[in-house]
Image (cartoon, rainbow, N blue to C red):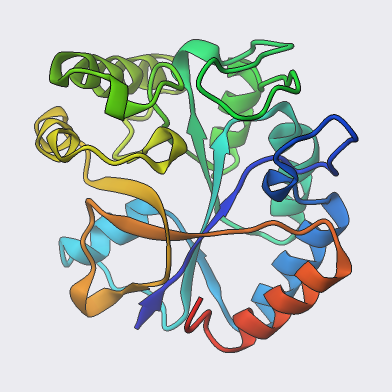
Amino acid sequence: MRVPILMYHKISPPTRATRLKGLCTSRQALDRQLGRLRRLGYSFCDFEDLRKALDREASLPDKPILLTFDDGYADNYSTAFPLLLKHRAKATLFLIAEDVGKTSLVWPDAMETEPTSLMTWDQAREMSRQGISVQSHGMTHRRLSRLSPEEIKKELQDSRRAIEREIGVRPIAYAFPYGVKREAARAIAETAGYRFLCTTESGVNDWETLDPFALKRLLISRHRWRHDLAFFWRSRNGFAGA
């Protein structure tokens, strides 16, 4: 069994000022993709479903797929959320706890210099009430490679506490900012109570050999017609070789 995890960011078309156009997916493309996945028989899952399967509390469906949205952009609420409800799709938000609700934001370590806005805690709470999972992307958006083990511990533990306080659900998954892994983070994450670590390493997870602390994901960049064609072909083939 394959367990593809799709990684989205902004659900809006890039502007002329956007440097990382590959992190943008249009509303129309996401709508088509969600419909396509449902028609192909995929079952939308989240990390709690994975946990139950790993702990032998429940089984995964035959064609599981996870949708993840990194950073918590405002358009994840205004644009993606209605589409997720329309297609009855489970999904996961990876929020940056310290930055929730900020506007005109540019992260110091990021290549993207176009200011952006993030959703508020009230919006995240509404999404959570409607079945969207809220997980951790850290307290800040700093690269772990530049942090000491103590700073990494603070990122993981403080963000987990903040999300639990605001949302009422304790996170079990953490996504590495910029996909930068640190071996120290694995032991820290386990101690902090996380069950899953998500990377940006491209690929599909095989259930028999799945490492919950090194999950691969597939970056979804869909703002041109050729991207739609690629998505349709890969989804038909279970994202094999992706």
